[in-house]
Image (tube, rainbow, N blue to C red; front, top):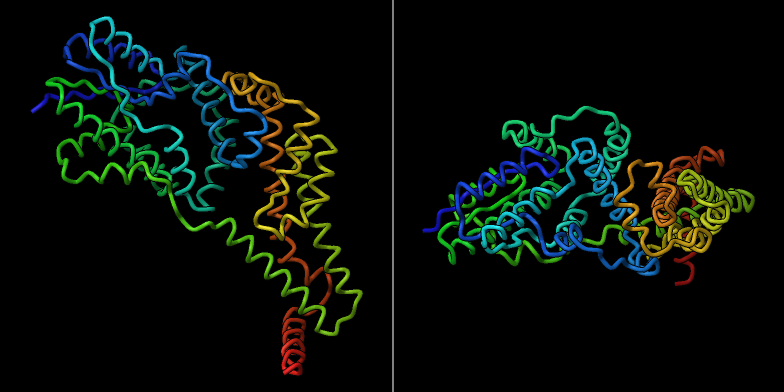
Length: 398
């Protein structure tokens, strides 16, 4: 039976660096496992190849990309306040292991899998709350005094984890619970090959990993922790539902007998409400007026097609105007203020894409909520009469 020792760290804490050094010297492990995957290790130690602007635009996951960047920014800001680079304690663990001629194992799940499952598992309401919380964090993190060393205190960590679990239960499952299990799997596999295993993991994982190490039979199968999340394509389902509801609404108005003027007004308001809100949010993101005009021109149509999004078109125009260049992803990650991030063309392009889509979505909701009061007609009468007349006309063909 291997002897396993866990060290809980905070990723921007000088005390954690010292704890790691002491543990390696005192425990004298046969191998050191670090909570990194190989991709994150390369990102911490080397210049990484950046995806092209075309690849980013083709990906279309603008909301997920912004969340990833903002989370990185917040961690960078906390690290700047403490004078410790995020992930420094993991690099120290690797350096100390190499100094003592001990092998190192990367035991964390691939960050791309984690982010994909994190975003995929969250419902729409959880995503909205997360984005709101991140916006608040962007404002509150600056100038705030933080006792980072408290982040390794298990009582503090447990309370924070429980709060996050209430805030986003599905997100917590992907970000915390699944990784607890994945880390435990990797540590146990190391334990099958080495007698003394030291694992350096974030303090938030200590209790969960230890629970699995104490009862390995409770571990979920490893393949289930790395498979793609295959939930229902809610975006396409909601988009198709919007299209059907809109067409039924227009048909009901057309067959209700309220007049051609009302039908034309309903169509014009669809174009205006969608277009104005999408353009307004594009400008709010700092987009160019041409990008806003593009969002206005296409949002009425993209709202009816679940395979298209106004933000894609606005982002293409924004990219042609701002001309993002290679190296800007690194600039985004290293930005010291949110204002500095917004001045980087690549960030502006993605922000425009995300907010143009938000504006278009809000426009669609606003249309269905306010269209009947704006037109000054009774929805009950219009819908009842419209569908009755449609049914009678269809019946007449048979």
